[in-house]
Length: 193
Image (cartoon, rainbow, N blue to C red; front, side, top):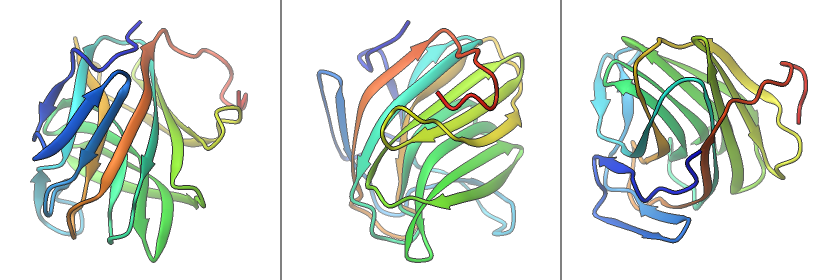
C-alpha cells in the first residue's frame, strides 16, 4: 500500500510546488494541459502530473482543494501508461462553474462532464481491476457515486497520482492530501460506500 507521494516523480514539473508531509501544493504554469486530438485537433501533454509507479489491480484516492477560476482549470487524479494512454478524473471549471469531469485517452481523448459540484474540495477514487476502470467522487468521503466505468489497457506498470493544469490561464493553486494506492475496492458497482 502506498500512502505517500515521497517516491513520486514529475511529468512537467511546475515552477512552484511544495511537498510537506502528506500535502502537495501546486501552482500551475501558463497554458498547461493534457489532451489528444479529438475535436480541437491538437495534442498537449504539458499538464502537471506527480506520479507513483504501481501495478494492477489497485484503488487510488486523493483529496483535492483548489481555487478554480479560469476556463478549463482542472485538478484530480491521473492514471498513465504513456502519452497515448491515460485517464484524468477530477473537476474542471467550464461554463462558469465546477463540474466533475473525466478524460479517457487511448490514442485520442474522450471528455465526459458529470454533475456540477458546489464545493472547491472533493475526493477522487479510481479503481483498476482486470482492464476495467471505475471512477468515483465524493465531497464528504462517505458516499461515492460513479462518474465513469471504462475499459483501460493493461500494462506491466502504471503511473498514478495528482494532476492539475490550466489550459487557458495560469496560477491555479491546488492542494492534494490523503493520497493512497491500496488493494482494489471490490464492492458492487451500485454500492456507494
